[in-house]
Each structure stands twice: as C-alpha cells, then as structure tokens.
Image (cartoon, rainbow, N blue to C red; front, side, top):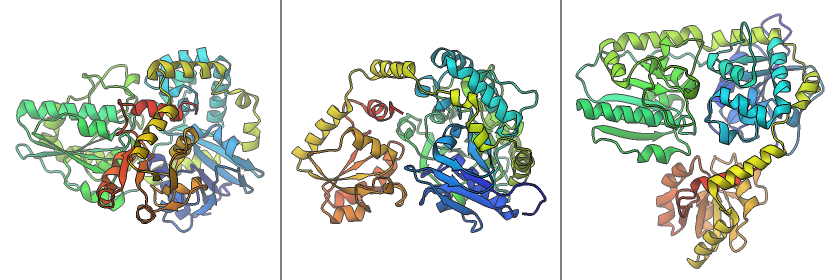
Length: 549
C-alpha cells in the first residue's frame, strides 16, 4: 500500500453477467485503487462481466457461484451496492476482519429488495413509505435503525442528494450532514470543441443510456419534444439512440416526423462510443452516461429517470447547473419542475454552445473524476466501523423481512387483476404444439441465464428435443444450465436444429436482428418469445416468470 492507513485490502462484491452502470463503476474503482498500490479483489462469476472487462492485471478475482457461499478468510473492506444489504449474509462467509461499506447508487437500491416493488415503483417515496408501513409494519423500524447504524459508522454513503432524499422519505432517515460519495468516471481528454451552430442543420442529438423501465419514459418524452420542435420550426434533427434493452420496441415504434431522423445504434462502449460521439451537438442522458458525454466537451442535459410517462411540463437542466452531485432524481420526487423547455435548450446551444460544453466538462473534472472520488472513498474506509459478523447479528438486521404472507397474497391478487387467468404453462403448451405441427421437433434455446432457468422451471417443452443452449453472452451465461450442451449458433445449425427460441426480453430484438438472416439461410425458425407472442402477451409472460421473486 502507498499510505499508512489500516486498509489491508478492498473487495468489490457485485457478480454480474450483463452490461450496466454499476459494473463499470466497480471496475473503474478497482483499477484506480489497484494503481494506487492497494490490494484489490473482485468477487464475480468465472466468466462474469467484471472479470472479463477489468484490464488491470493487478486486480485479484474471487470466483462466485450461486450454488455455494463465497469464503472471505482475509482482512478486507467489502464494497457493495445498498441493494445487497441481505445478499452479503446470504452469499458470503467471513472469518476475518471484514468491514462492510454500502454505496447507494440508485434511489431505489434498497426499495427494490422489498416484495411487490414491481407494483409500487412508480409511486413517490412518501406514498411508498405509507405502503411499506401497511405491508411490512414490523420491518420499518429495524430498516431505519440499520440505515442509521451504517451511516453513523461510515458504512453507507449516497451517490447524490436524490438518493438520500428518496431513502429519507421512504424510511424516515435523516442526517444533518449526509455521507456523499459521487459516481466517478475515468478522466479523458476533451475531444469536442463545440462551435456555435445557428442555422446549420441538421442538429445532432444523442440519447445515451439503456432502454429499460425507468429510462425509456424520459427518452420518449425527449423524442416527442424533438418531434414537436422539428415540425413547428421546420428544423431537421438527427436523433441518435445509443443503448439497448427490453423497451427498444417502444422507442423504435414511436411515430416521428420525416424531419427527425431516428438512428438506433444499439450498445456501444469504450473507444467505439467515444468515436461515435465526436460530432454530436447535444447529449441527453441519465446518471453516469451524462458524465461520459459531458467530459468529452458535449453540452449535456441531465435527465431524470421515471417509471411512468413524463409530464408535458417537465423541464431540462444542463449538467453544469445541477446541485448535490445529482445524477438524476426520479421525476415523481420533484416537487416543482425548473429549467428549460426543449426549444430553450436548442436556443441556448445555438447561442452559447462552446461555453456550455466547457462548463459541463469542468463540472465533471471538479466533482466526478476518479481521483476525487477515490480520495473520498478511502476516507470513509479509514473510518469504517461496520464489522461483518457483528452487523449480520444485529437484532434489527435480523428483524428485517422483505417478504411475508401478506405481500405474497397481494402479489397473487395484483397478478390476477393485471393479467387475468393467464396460465404460462398452458400458453407454452399451445406454442410448442404449433411448432411441432410445422415439423419443428429439434429446438435450441438462445440465452442461458436466469430467464431461461425460470422458463424451463415453468415448462420444459416435453414434446420437443432440446439439443442445447446457445449462449447469448459469449459463453458467460450458459454455464448456469449444466444439464444442456452449450453451443454457438453455428453448432446449432450443424446439429440439425429446426427452431431456435430466444429466451431474453432485454436483448430479444438485438439477438433477432443479428441472426435472422443466418437462420433464414439455414432453414431454421427463429422465434421471439415476447415479440411473437399471441394476443400481445409480452407482459403476462414476463410477470409469470418473475412474479415469485
């Protein structure tokens, strides 16, 4: 180590197979701390995303397996998102001095661990507080006490004010001086030197972010505003969408004026992403994606996430004007919308584009560089007094119940109201019968992750021969399904596969578009579980798979 602190080592715990902000965050922090001379570990799957994408050879890896607990037999500071509050006890065994540090990196980090979150996520935190009191009355005081204990002992920090505000309202937690640990990014050389552009068209707008449940509603709002602006002023716009996810069809299907050129680019990372952003005029993004665009010198609007349609009177804010390290507040937590209309955003860009780009860049350098955040993290760790074994044996920690008989009853009721008498097994039986009538008896499943495990638990296609699983993440997911052969799509063709079922909602469109021509050429049916569903049963299928946890 390079300092005289008592930090023996630092361990990041967030096993994952997918691309996401938390994955990149932990990789960046691990690499930066390792470069400072600290002993750093990452707990991840054998072929997990963090292990695969961490390029610093000094970072150590500990293998994570869902079927068994991971042993930590060395002194370390364990860093996890607040959503892992219960998972650390469930998945880890510690027999040394292990200190816990939870980083709240999403307003709902803790809320989404409570049963029924899927049904109350669209409410504001005051309403959620009342709901939790009714459904989990015995858990509210213990949860508040645990949050307070962690915070007071430097075992909890919030990434920004919106994260603190949501948890304060939902659980009744208050702090005179909240612990803040902003989200960092790796410093890059500013590459965009924006020139004033009044009268030069088309204006190039980019959205950067996943097309997921809380980011798609604000994206649709931006696209509608852009469409209205283009039609009102006759201004051509290029609208680039960088990102992918289960809500991609909603983005692709939104009607737009011929003046708005929608360009779907899918997921881009690292140098490929930077290269694409070189000529962008204005960026709209949530969270760390906004930092990524701003540090390149692009005038960047920070967008607030939302689980429901965004109101027409929503306003936009340049990143350089935000407060409390904010990387976006849930729209329904905002008491009064302040900022700019879409037209005002374009006007300010055309008049002051170079200065706005410079201001956004300097804001990132002052608050979100890896050096600034690493220094803050080390300060918390040096004063961290949350010892693992002592913590998991706290009476309040043990009393937290995030699922109970009442929540199970409500879950069943909500599902019936929303989806009627939909029976997934019966539905899949009919689908399989349709395949078999076409002569498709030998099938392969594309995607071997948790989704496929749940699917086969519901229905294992008994009248077809499953010849194997086509791994949809470069052989990182399929190993979870040990009972099936893991193969490439070329192997599936060679083995006489007659039908391939895509088992993923988030990446269904991406997989389909990438392989539809090859399947057609090889005479293989390529079936989308969701998009090809009969009678628009996409949500019913998904909720049937995940309604029990």
